[in-house]
Image (cartoon, rainbow over the protein chains, first blue to last red):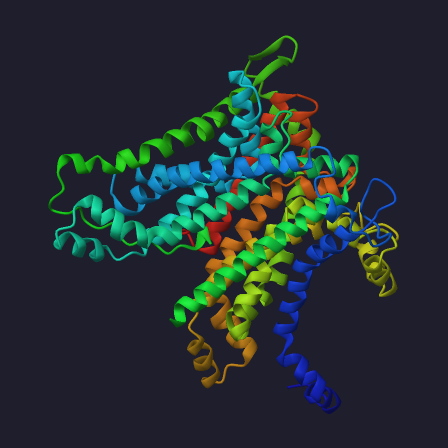
Length: 276
Length: 306
């Protein structure tokens, strides 16, 4: 080693040693701060009372927006539309995707690799390409843009994610469990309902949750296929041009709080179940 | 995540009781989903291919004239946006890897009983609409705000000005702001696959490396990092692909000088209503990404990703 004694002394001094030992932890926590910072800003600025149309600079504390979350025209309408689309897109994508995943994981059939490619491609492509091509189809067909075109678009891009989530789960399943059920005289339907489905359930739930989140938060594909229909992300996008009401921060904060609460309750229930 | 599933075990052999009817089961399962993808995913791509070689106007309608010059015109006019998209996306991906790796490592090996809490903190930002969170960066990076003042007084802005990624005392409406937004938006897509592959590593391998007199850095370079390669590959793909096509960060945090190819496609399609150019541009983007991804997967030697 060519380190001079002076350098050696600095490197082995206490604070430097501590720093070196905890470098990964510090870097990880810095990244976490980078991830969480915008959420903190969103929450703080939900209590702002901006002077102009834009809510980008802190003026003074106010709970006005919290007491009147629907006080902006079209805001809550767009929110409920987004929720409806997300629910139906989740149902559609989960049903179609689960069937595909079972076929891919459990059966041999012709054109297996082409089917896999067809399912993988939507994920390997930037959203804007899929968005523009689907809108081209609708334009050529003379379809009116609105609720149905958005729903079709959302089911299409959620589908592949459901397939991957469910497939991974079904693949890791022990096939002998089903054989055992059949040895014990269960009919194929009983085997499916009482053995296969419960084991695959976590994968299906994960796929469904992912679909819901993807659909609810989607902007790019919706922007191309919505026509004049306004979903919640479309509303936020429009307000970035026209003026951002404090209410969108309120909705953002509330969504965050509800989601974290759900996760915590889920953890508590899961923890209790494990103990009992 | 999706891309890191292991090589599938061979599907179980059909049960001896399999009759002819049962042989049809997979096809019935496939039918609805495949039909859906053919009609709403594959057919649109065909339509788009035909649109890209059409000429005409909105009033008189478009006709297929095999006008391939649209591709050439689109490339010569918009190649700066193409190059910019790739450059921004590549930088953001590299930053995501540099920032995300320590956090994934921390959660996988050092978090102990805090693991679940940290995991929730990584996923939780997802629950607030990403457009709202991207708008929050407008506040964080606002001119004369605490972040920009701090960067200026630490002379960081002098360095970034010299690199040409910021201008004067501004961060908003510069390449730095757009890359910062892209990095932020796609960071969880890097962290989750990294975590998944790091978590599978047997901690005893670290001890073994230490017993064999490997220093921590050597252990990381020779043991941990190679074993986390599937996560690195999946994470970089999940970050790079959507970042290249993104137009939200460039629109909200950049100026007209930071427009990416997504912005061009969006405005050609939704504002200018020049469908052939928009179609040609999306095809070039798709082809470029598929080519880059194929080369990357070959090079990194993990072809069994799907």
